[in-house]
Amino acid sequence: MNVTSVLVIRLRELGDTILATPLLRQLKKIYPQARLDVLCQKANRVILKDSRYVDETIVLPRKASALEFLKLARSLRAKKYDLIIDAQGLPKTALMSRLIGAKKRTGFRNRGWRNRICYSHPVQRSHSEYMALANLRLIQDDRVDFCDTVLELEVSEKAEASADRFKRRYFAGPVAAVFGVDRYRYRSWSPQKTAAIADRLAGLGLQPWLVYGPGQEADANRIASFMKCGAVCDYEMPTFDTLAALLSRCELCVGNDGGPMHAARAVGIPTVTIYHHPAALSWAPIHDRQHRIVSTRGAALSGFGGHFVTDALSLDEIPLEAVWQTVMQVVSQGVSLRTTSIAA
Image (cartoon, rainbow, N blue to C red; front, side, top):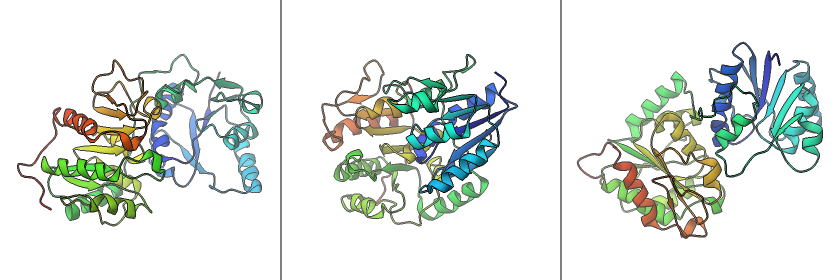
């Protein structure tokens, strides 16, 4: 098949978009002369706008009307894409794939009309498979390198400069990022236990930086209220690419699953992520010992050293000591520590 133009559909979540970066890299490697566009939304365009692999980002408004949806589909149909990859898997993205129309349209197999009508080449996905790897299967080409699942996040010079200013103002010595918030309560570990981990990191000489997003200030301040040591908590909200640049200046990142945790992996710092089964199986690189997992009961992580599967049924029940033991395994691999602890 001669491929001269490719459209990837990937909307919404920042972390999921970062997990799609190996897909973009492999597409550009396999089809180096092809135009590669991404249909995204304003919220996740920040991940894609500086990518060396993407020629154009096309924004679908989050609450697009039916008329806006159809007009966009019509304009994209005129581009005559050879290959469309729906890495989102929503009914509306499947429908968009069909309306744009390409000879080859791939997406994850679902029940019902989407497979029969929208995708010419649906792909069966195992929910126990790492999402970055599952995305690569959507290409359906013998040349795909399935070992190439390293996440990428390109940061602009402007974001780097902004991160340097933030660092000079707020950071003192080596820093540990602590991501203890989430918009969904069931995906968030106990704020008291998160505060205890932050205090213990301070005791090692790492300055805790409480990472949060817009509208999550109250949740971060609640964690800080349980802490005995001081933490970087009240600050002007950085953009996501500045956040990524700041994470690259940290020693490690500990906390819940989410965009900041995927960004931390992409910029190359060690991570300890607290997961609810079965999320650990699809959203974390279980083969990578630099990135450790602490999970509720049921995660099939046996045989992968360094991960901790607890008997907890919910995220809140995951013991403090299970997370701390895993953090210490990461620290033992080589983390810069100050000779004195951070004072309150």
